[in-house]
Amino acid sequence: MSSQSVATIAASGTTSDAVKLSATHAVHAVAFPAAMTGTAVAVHGSFDGVTFLPVYRDGAAYTITFVASSIHQINPAILFGLSHFKLVSNGTEAAERKITISHERVL
Image (tube, rainbow, N blue to C red; front, side, top):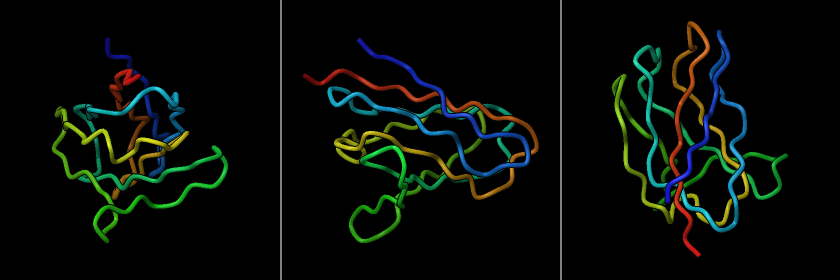
């Protein structure tokens, strides 16, 4: 059964609050709202919920390019093993934005 979390980017901000992941869950989809100002988000991860660093895949920073009102499937291996992550928009959001994160129990 899938679970959902919400990553919130504050008005006039670019970085979401931290999304905490259970060690037994893997992210598999991200849904962007209709009113997103940015067109891509970089993913920053953490092992301790304090220090966040850009996530790299195959030597490049992992970003999700999107259009508003869209769902993007994520390879569960990309964030698996991290305890927290944040999404960093490439545009300053004009108002608060709530991005829905879907994750699945894998154990």
